[in-house]
Length: 152
Length: 152
DNA sequence: TTGAGATCATCTCAGGTGAGACTTTCTCGG
DNA sequence: CCGAGAAAGTCTCACCTGAGATGATCTCAA
Image (cartoon, rainbow over all chains, first blue to last red; front, side):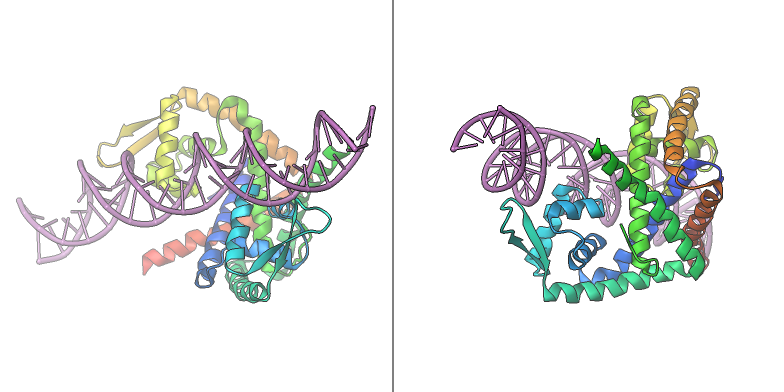
C-alpha cells in the first residue's frame, strides 16, 4: 500500500483500509459476547443519551433507518434495551438501555477497547491524539454542511 | 460527534465515518462516468501494475474474491479491461487495462480527486501529510502480521 | 512419474443493506 | 377545526457481499 501523500484519492483508500482493519479486529475480539460493533455503537449512544429516537440514533452512527430497526429489534429481543412510547409524540419511541444492556456493553466495550489498543500500539500517545483530531475535523464538516442546508 | 481523544474505540467510529463520507462524495461526483470507487481502485491497481492476478488485486484493495470476479466481469463487459490467460499458469488470468479503460479512469479519477480535495480543504497541506502518514502506519501492520504469519 | 495438497478463479447460496412505499401521528397555515 | 404535508417507525424488495464448494491447474516430495 505505498501511496503518494499528495494524492487525495489515496487517503480515501487508507480510510477504507483502516476502518476495515479496525472493524475486523474489534468484532473478532468481542465475538464471545455476541455483540458486534453496530450493537455496541447503538448501546453506547443510548447509554450516553446522545440520541433519544431511532432516527437520531441512525444519524449519529451513520446507520440506515431500516438497518437500525433490525438492530434495535435484535437488542430488545435480547433484553439489552427497550423501546418505550414517548408521551408527547406517539410516533416516536424512546430507547432505553437496561441493566443487562449496560453490563453487556461494559464487557464488550472492554474487548473492543483492547483490540483497538492493540492496533494502536504502532502510534504513540501524541500521534493518536493527532489522528483523532484530524479525523474529527474531517468528519465534522458533514454535520456542518447538513446544518447549513437546513438553514436555507 | 464529540468523542474523547483518549478512547480508542472512538477512533474506530471516526475511521468509519471518514470513510463513509469520502466514499459518498466520491461516488456522487463520479456518477456521470458510471464508474464507482471500486471500479476505479481496480483499474488503478491494474494500470500501475500493482497486481497481476485477481487474487493480488483483491488483497491490495481489500475486496473479497467473489466480489472481485463480478467487478472484473463488469469492467470487461464495458471494455475497460480484459483478461488474458497467462502462459505459465493456466489457472490465473493476467488483467490488462485497455485504452478505453485508461481514458475512463483518467476522467473518473479527476472527479474523485476533485471530490476528495473538496473534503480536504478543512486540512492544510501539513495536516494532510500527517493524516496520510498516520493512517499508513496504522494500516501497514496488517500486512506485516500476514507476512510474519507466513514465515512461521 | 505420480499422487496429495495448495492455488486461482468461479459459482452458489445465505445473509446483510438501503431506497422507497406505507401507516400512524404530528404540525401548521388557512 | 381541517386538510396538506412532514416525520417516526416499519416493511418489502432488489441488490450487494462474503464464506464455502467446485473445477482446473500447479507444485513438490516420494
